Length: 113
Length: 112
Image 1 (cartoon, rainbow over the protein chains, first blue to last red):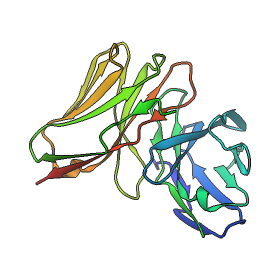
Image 2 (cartoon, one colour; image 1 turned 90 degrees about the vertical axis):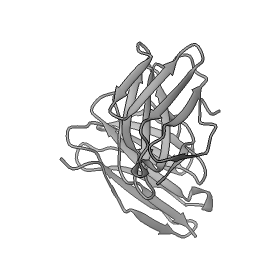
Image 3 (spheres, each protein chain N blue to C red; image 1 turned 60 degrees about the vertical axis):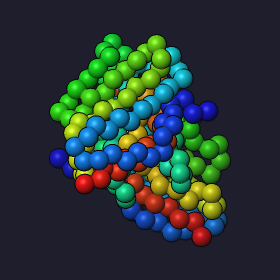
Image 4 (cartoon, rainbow over the protein chains, first blue to last red; image 1 turned 45 degrees about the horizontal axis):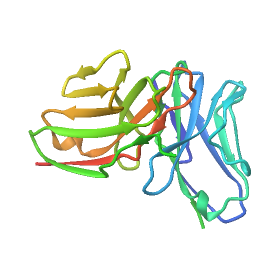
């Protein structure tokens, strides 16, 4: 049973470009969460999605960030017009149900130059 | 607003001794707590959890203690092994909530 998959593992973007981060949850998991870890900080919740629905996006910056979890395919975290402050590790997690243990992917390390 | 705090950024312990990692929280609505372990360049791995109806949960060398009145939990690793060297995050959630709140992590080094 494959774990949570994230790609790419490393992503370099110039300021102003778009970044797309992908997450495939564990088989049988319909709940997906995105977290961001800035240097020297803990994991910060960004958004929680179920298939085709955003349940909680209280941790998402109001502008430039969006997330989706379509009926088919992976969850996507999209960052438009990236800035240097977006450089961080972005982790995706999935769980079989709300409030249950979350299983994390290996993360995508975004570097904005 | 850091609702889950790990005040010790790092901890060094001799192999075979006990490692005690601490975590404090501020939100009295939290009722489910987890510990995750993270190696460099990898995602966090679930280690052990405890719900607020218990004050202790044990799994092999790992034991988590919860003191609800003090809003404090701790992870004990006995005996510590070099392979336990990693960053440990505690996390908390409320049954009515959608998210886990993570601490900033404690980097544990077990010295052979």
